Image 1: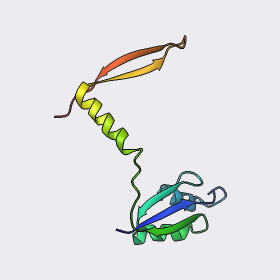
Image 2: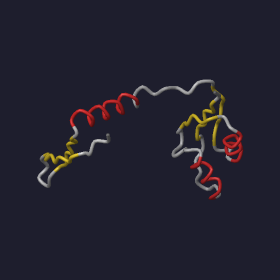
Image 3: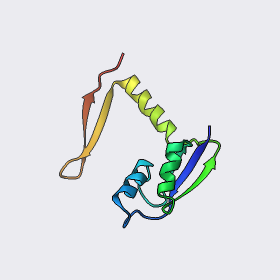
Image 4: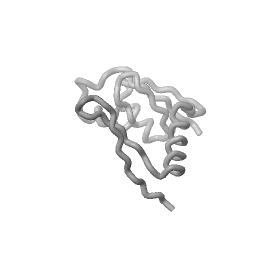
Length: 107
C-alpha cells in the first residue's frame, strides 16, 4: 500500500479558515509535524489545497514507531494482571499520595 508523508512546513497563521481546517483534517498540528496518510484521491485533493503550506512525498511503507508499541502492551498487561491502577498526585505540602481505583475487567 502506498502512503503519503505530509509535513507542515509553513504556519497556517494568516491563511483562510478553510485552509486551516484542511491542515487540521490532515492531522497536522504544528510546524514540522509529519503524518503518514493513505494515498487516496481525497487526501491528495486536501494536500493540493494547502500545497503552499506542506511538503509531500510518496513512500511505500509506513514506518513503525517502536516507542509507542511497548507502552500500549505494558499498559494492557498491567490492567489484566492486577485489576487496579494507582493514581499518584501531589498533596498541598508537595508529598506524593496514592489513591486506588478498581477497574472492571472486560470479559
